[in-house]
Length: 595
Picture 1 (cartoon, rainbow, N blue to C red):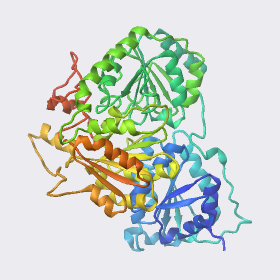
Picture 2 (cartoon, rainbow, N blue to C red):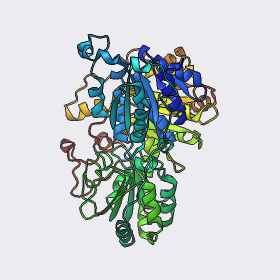
Picture 3 (tube, rainbow, N blue to C red):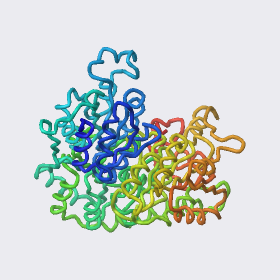
Picture 4 (cartoon, one colour):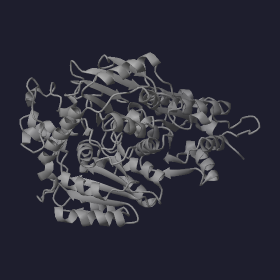
């Protein structure tokens, strides 16, 4: 007998959903029955913790442009899901989450868990999604599925939750009365594209033509719109400075002369310096968030600005743009491309060369260091040399983001670097690798995660998921034995406080040994001369790997902390800029609120 779980699985298959990430429950078993009947066209990937389902779906969506789909059961399954939903909401990632629920006629019994695992799930999810729907009947399900995918993929993309009561999910599906009809326009995001008015485009083009030192800040919206190759073609022609947010990394190849790297307090020192010299700054698919805008000290007074964003509420949120271009990033750039007559500014390019060279020289000793414990920069540079064009790098939160951002360049345009910047929570990389590995498949490239030992510990149980599915994932653990960012924050601002930041103890943890116990290959690196061989071994292994590297606990990518510690690669202070540590709230290069 066909049931509503069949109907839902049928619609998901028609919407080209290849994978559903999650954990079954009694209330959602009918969905899993429907998926099993349609395998291998659609597959379910079991995670060990519902928190991981959202992160796996998030990574899948970032790499494909299609909504990532995840499922959890009622109660504790639902309450573990929000981390991934908030990440997707803030990062504008399309997602559809299917959540189990108690029977409809148990409404009065949900309060205080009188009915087991019951609570008000609609109210719980509404603040952290684009939309949350309770499915009231079998007949209502098709329209709500269509609505979920329409809303998830429409500008601005984000997560939608479908809550399906147990009696609805298990109900008989009358295929003659209830049709599994989908809207194929909502398979990919953005499902709707629009361009700014011609008059606004002309005004923006005139600003470009007058600029002597133009710059573009490329954010995650460039990738969300599929505009990286187009932006690269435009930048190759007019040669502005191009810097990116962490989420925008790969918007242009960072090997280009005009590319300044990641603009972030733990990103490229050259980017931080060069952006201040621009006379025109184009915020392209970037929301000018706290870290990209350097604690909102950018743009500087006197800098002309253009904002390109599909969300009309984003323009003017943190500064008043000179020209606002409200439209899809790719369509807007296509329109501008035909209007821009600007020529490369040789003096500006020479200045970019000089600044980049100076900061590269400042880091040279660290990158080639043979010191023990190991410098993370040495590890990242070796990793960069091993990566192929089909490989994907996933960063966990905190310092891993900086080590990747600075030392592993994007050599091609496109989204091959995934960052948890919507929420910035630790524990993103291992579960996100599940979604990324599903996209790449067994015949694709490697997924490489980089995390500190703190971030790695959050989701260590999902390594068993990597092993069970024989995923080609290399998990690099930069083990410094501490919660590094927090330890330095306590030390600098609370008179050498050291409270609840130490993760190591005598003999452990040994993350490589733990990986072996979970069915992965474990490799432990203690000295720089072991790095290259360990990476070769990891990339040659036909299955998942944990590569644990014991690193210097005093190493940090945050420029403000580096100056305090007297480390190389520091940004030179400029007159009138606040750099005193006691003034951290005013300083544009101290990362505030980082996990």
